[in-house]
Length: 341
Ligand SMILES: [Zn+2]
Ligand SMILES: [Zn+2]
Image (tube, rainbow, N blue to C red; front, side, top):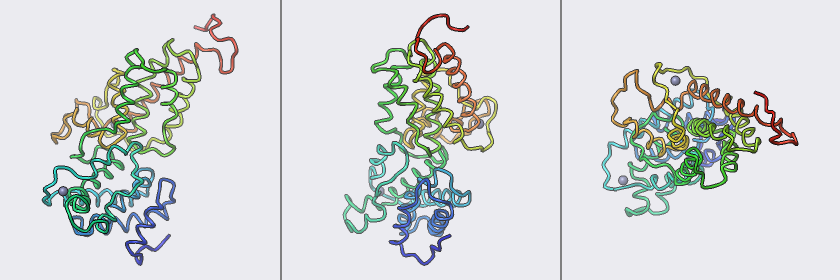
């Protein structure tokens, strides 16, 4: 356990940069708790940008499996900061964090977001530090970090998934609608292996939804290479144990309907970024703050572990059924006829 109380901001900043998804809790949690505590004590204050930057820097750790107390402290402090900072006036039409959202392909922010150094680079002027250190920009980063750690728990994130995700949606839409632009075997094989070892909740949900959206195609006679199905099965089997074990809080009809593969395909990628989730939330009218009744699908149920477990089971069933019609792996007589019924 490291003692953080005597460290200067520079020393803390250096320590934050070394925290990532594989950091041990006894190293990361004290830093998170210290940082969150400082932010919580003055969430709209002049130094708020420093502590928000710290929590953003440690978001790779926080999005994976942080200590419960550290996670809760970080989320509370980030939400309080967003609320307090949003209340301060600003004359900008946009803020630098919005331009950075396109690079959040794996959700985790690893670069310098300027919040720590903006002041030093350009002490005055609206184009540089003014905009970076503007409360509106700091609040924006606080919301992005919150949504990455706990998807669909914060509103007012600008809608728009990264360009790369939109291009994935287009390519896979060709496949699930049966007019692929590219080699579908290659596309599906690439999708099956794209999940990082320690995905964010949004990334993990998105992966499982994409696997489900594309499984009917993989299971059809259109795919002739069984290794595609094998990798999809392997990808899903590796993903399922990463799901959390929080109990489902949803009513019988609140889990999403995944019967339309094209719709599910789009959502599979929208789930993977804060901007994409904001796009999806708009479809659901979620920003209007009205409480949906128990009979309606809820947008946040797309990341519900129970829903995703069920979805993964359904997907695996389709794929393993289809695999029966292939020769055993390594067999040298493909399409020899006489498939078992
Ligand atoms: Zn501003
Ligand atoms: Zn649920």
